[in-house]
Image 1 (cartoon, rainbow, N blue to C red):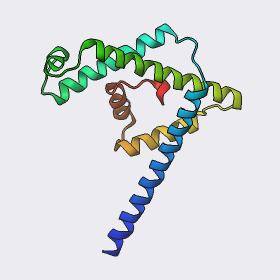
Image 2 (cartoon, helix red, strand yellow):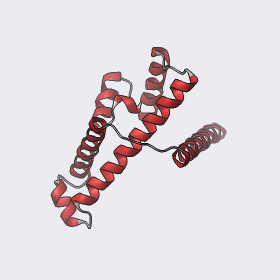
Image 3 (cartoon, rainbow, N blue to C red):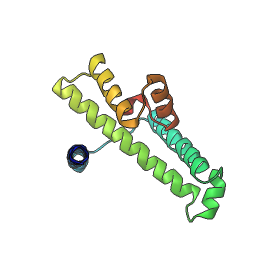
Image 4 (cartoon, rainbow, N blue to C red):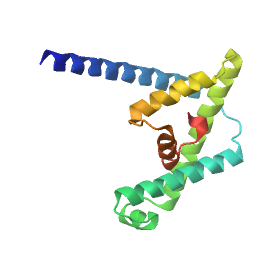
Length: 151
């Protein structure tokens, strides 16, 4: 019983640390968003993120709503294609904004991601997602609509 309590305490501590870190990251992004303005979004990147978002939504609807198409799903809810597109545009802008902030900070601070650091991060993500094989992990990410820049 003591071993179980120790494991549970370790898990709860790790969850609390992760939550605190996520909260700090959100606060940083919120602060940046309040003081920075994006003058222009790259149209090619916008379209890519919008398409990725919409494809992901279609996959999720089909998976979680017993094979329903997007149109069937929308008919059964109060959502419209226009709502979905607006959400996709907001998502794309948010992702591009974060990418611009990150790239600007990295450039100003002289930060670079080494292959070693990237590999370590991928391994951490694989562990958190429960993957042992890297090719399966990359397939999973692709299926979830992730792009390399997000990592």
